[in-house]
Structures are given as C-alpha cells and as structure tokens.
Image (tube, rainbow, N blue to C red; front, side, top):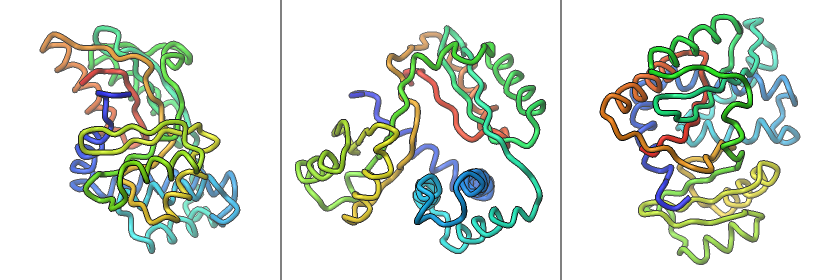
Length: 242
C-alpha cells in the first residue's frame, strides 16, 4: 500500500464534507437505519451498528444526532426501506470503479449511476467485472499529528489487537485488518484512547491504473463528482493512481 496513502483523500473528502455536512449526515443516517434493521438498536449487541457509530464520530456527527438517528431507525418513522446495491464498471482507460448505493428506488439509482459512467467516459459493467481487483479490508487511518503514542508502540498495539498490517505514511499511520477482525481492532484502539481520522471496512485495490492524458483525468473527475453528488451513492472505490 506504500505510496497510496488514503489520508490525503480523507482530508480532501473531509473538506468537502465540512461544506455539506447535512448531506453527509443524511448518508450516515441511512447506514444507521440499515444496521439497526439488521441487528437491532443496541450497539452493545450490534457490532455493525458500533462500526457505523464510529464512522459517524470520525465524520464529526454529534452524539445527539447519532442517538436520534438510531431511535428514528428503530421506529422507522419515515416508513422508508433502504437497500444496499452495488454497481461495477470502468472509467476512462479502464480504471476500475465500484459504487455502493443505499437507495429506496433501485431503478433511479441504476439510471443515475449508469449516466455518471457514460458522461465520465466509462461504462457500467456486470457485477463481478472489477471487484476481483480489490480486497475487502478494514482500514484505520490515524493522523500522526493527533496521536501521542510513538510508532513502534502504536504498531504493537494494533498487531496485538489482531491487525494484519501496519504502514507509516508521510502524515499518517494506516492499519489494515480482515473484515472479521475490524471491529475488535477498532475497539481496542478506541479503548486505548487513540484518535482515528477514519475507520471503516473498505475496498483496497490490488493494482493501480495511471491516467496520462488531461482529457482522461477530466473525465474521471467528472465521473467521481457526479457519483459524489448522487444522494443514493454511499461509497465509491476505484484504482485510479491519483
């Protein structure tokens, strides 16, 4: 993973998120609703909900907003059912793209995602066409400036908790886990008082694709911007070597 730090992207996303917190909180609220529906409203017994709450906190979502979202999901006050739908496809020059959407209208979501691929110089493919190029991993990113523990001590804490790998990047530490061990590692670091810039189960590319022409870069940015603006889209993973 060296040379492909997620931290710069996270900081970029946080800057965008700070300008549109309402949208971010709405997206996180949907994740809470899905987690509550799957395992109940008590985070003590619902590991998925605990992970979503941690993600909410890393996005600076206030505790009372999180609690309201859980209560709302438990009562399903809106009567809206969201489902997770995954789309796969290619951007310019064969960049692999995976899109995860939480939607109450599959037809609308599919049409919007397909339109983004088309206008971004790519095309939507079938499920499985690019996912084999990614590994699903737990990824915890820690800002070097925010943690007091030294590198070796932090690495041992992560590995002792069950992490698979620990990498020191220029401005961050990146801890990877298996999806099954993610919650245990995150909770161990949280209990040790270690602040996390980001903590989530994500898709990490096995290889990266470089875009050499300005036109391809422009199209790829258009594709990502259109997906980012889509209210149904929760996560976008790609192997563009930015």
